Length: 640
Ligand code: OTU
Image (cartoon, rainbow, N blue to C red; front, side, top):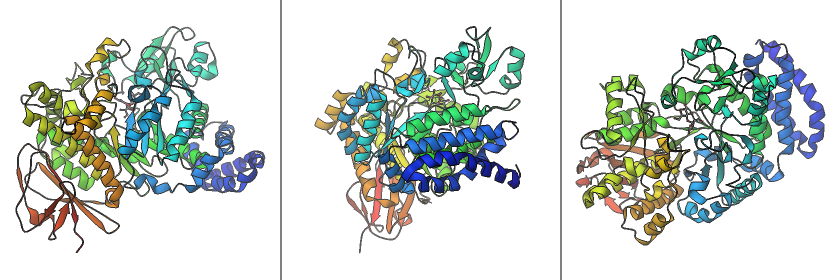
């Protein structure tokens, strides 16, 4: 688009929006200012996507109108939140995230109220509830096959209850985070049902092909996401007007939306802003890399996928400015960071840190971890990582091959080792994970398992050896401590704070049996929580008290928010040390990711006496210090 064309599009758009603005009442001035600031961004994102269409002006107008209508309908308390919430809240040290399934963590939305004291004790300020929308009966990919974005699954509650719960969270200084599954809908979403009934407009919401020849230019270039399902990303559906191939990147009952159709972007924007107006603060954009498809390309991370996100971001800035997007792109690290920018997603999962931490734990070698902290950990101003150890998905070894090669590591061989290690197949491994989506052709797989199972607690408890149990507990704590001290928002996977083991009972449930990610999605154990509280010396008791301490630490340590990390070179290579500085505070974190005792080269940690906050001890650089297996120090310079 030339600047002149953009200007013309913009001015036509402004005229068309005027009658709507007249209905905005007191908000008119604010909305005019927001339109002025964000309409150009919206148009810049949309024109390269749809500018070639004869009806582009009509679609631009419809999209802008959808945003403006949602802005006018925004409930007053949320409009206040838009005004009052400093946009940089996501970068503050006091932010602590937690994620869980409504049913597994609390039974229902109403049940969540009883869990609030537990969350508050952990310092949680960011609560990510896993998809809680209406879904098909039977398999629904843990809620990621959405039948309606506007209805809560009846067994969990209602949309009204959710909106009220959002208020309750806000009153406690917590943000509500929900998934927005925008790459696909369930095959029984109203749009899919209309497509089945022969509605050509709704058929054009999806990727549908009459014959296989039309599928091939795409199919040949795609990576298999779920090899277990057999076939490729296309499914033949007899129930679609005479039979059609439908694109379904994930499970066959999840139909990919067709964003090359601007009506889809408008429709999904409507659903998104409906959720924003229920009080959702952060939307986790599921599977963003897949949003755009082009024949002959891998159909992942295409530049147009970024434009779709930018268009939604600009529309949200008009309608619900305090809404934040979190990107879920579990891809090559170079691609992951491309979504992390204020005009796309201000938050993003940090899969590279996650898998590098597990890598260091298995190899007792922190070189790769140090390397990524030095080179790949920064994010643009106004953005932050969401750092985590476990989530509801499997672990894939998403390090960059070139980074590994530079360290003399063979990427394929190393990934095979990590898979063997974390599935307990490697001799001497402490981990008890399961291979997820093992590809018989390549032998490749990913890993399922809870933090406790992967960090060795399960194997150690089966063994009954107290020193192994102690090591496993220390692993869990030190790994979480790194997540809590490496900036960004740490995201606790609920259940891990009480070291819940794998849940093998998923195989008894029909809808779950074929997907072993359910092994690490256990029902929250009240019994375990009670034991953790009553018996602080048990593994769950030690982990819970450590998680509470880490939570409390972040509240007092501005240095732990987003900011620069200065790695400190320490030998041997199973130790990791780095310094965090902000607002006059300096913290030095030292972790031993091995079962060995380590002599710490104290002089490398700085010349001053400091206080070890974690072990409540004096750290004197002139004295010898040793760090116990999987030990941790958090040093702060003592005021003189
Ligand atoms: C996401 O994950 C969700 O986290 C999964 O739970 C869903 O099954 C899936 O989408 C479909 O909705 O491949 O193995 O780069 O890697 O979107 C998990 C992003 C996945 C993909 C990611 C996907």
